[in-house]
Image (cartoon, rainbow over all chains, first blue to last red; front, side, top):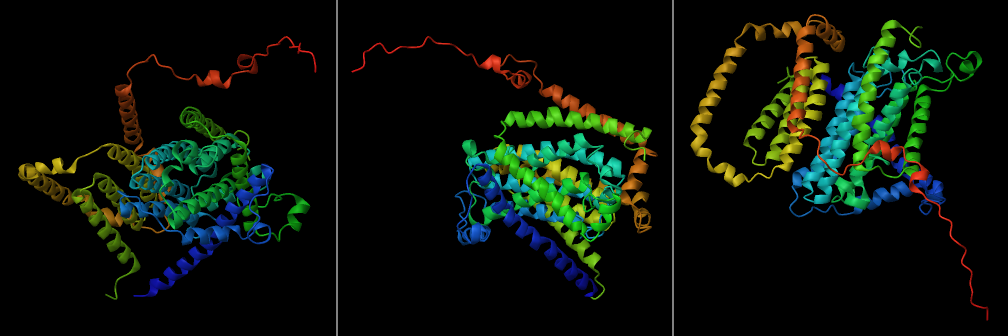
Length: 341
Length: 206
């Protein structure tokens, strides 16, 4: 009877191996964000807790954990608590299909890309439920904004992913990366550059980050869908947002920049002397580049107006991606550059 | 009890969840909660499809129904302000009719389940372990079932165009922004530099 229990426990341990570094990474992404934006604005950022503020994330966690979770009057209690859980669950579950190195993946499934899209679409429910159950106008407006934004950009993102799977002939993320091996010129950011731009900007919109952070536009609707949340319930939203940011960065590295493949592949001498560097390093190196980009965007751009966001999604990205998919199909069928080798 | 495999446990778990959430959809008093239980229904049936090795269909069910269709449902239901007390008032009056319809549906379903199609399904699905679900489905859709597939797509497109034309009320004369004009704006259009005569302080210094 208990023969499957072994496997079950083994899977749980693997989940732990992925989630523990992820949560630590989330904690230090918040620190990096505050520090980086601080320096960009000629401030120092947090520097009180620990040497140079290194322990600031832990102080934040302890502070949030000690706080009381306030239930607004007239709120639907079960749904109020379900909201943050439904938001963070999918953003962690999506990591199941992320390959960290050749074969180093929790669930090596054939429908990896669609699974990722499905997970992002489930996390919309977390936002809507949180906004509705809060029994507050601001929270509800924030939830509506966020949901419509996420749904709109999911389409553009999906089309960008379609172009990647057309090139790789597979929806398995591991296969997509190994199809890019050869040299840096085989990475998909060269033939699919317009799709990379669309994917990256849609990723920023999907994670509700600046300049698309309308759901929590504090000048209009206080803090959006999580305005009524305090303590750990708020911390879950916070955690999920940063986990999503890291996920989008890792995905960009995987889909367009060769994932765990070394950038020196195919170069005679350099390839040999950098063989000892593990693939996971390259993946995280590339991902942190894009993560830095996300923080940089926040420090640089003012917030978009709501109609501008919708226009960009529906009138610019979706037509562009639709046309590009047809063009790409033509390129692939006729084996034009860069698909002739 | 010892013969219960992990797969069976999952099957009963998902089936139980499916039946329970389906009941809650019908019996729930709050329509928003009903929609959420319907979402749970779809997720549970996606789990069942996963057990049948139909991984693409399972994930597509979550993506399309849970991710797109039900979100719109939820939007609409949240906007409605339904008074539940008045909704319940006519319950006993329509109960006989509802029962008749329910029985008719049951009879229809029994008819369908007796059909040949359902008896040959399991052997066709779990024939081989290493079949790539996505490729198989893609090949079938774009070769054998090409016409039905494309016709279904066109029907959906027609429905979409019809829905848009129903809600479109013609061009109204309203103050809307011309985004192209906003984007192409130049410095000369917004900023005018005027030169003033220099004002001289005529009062003598003390």
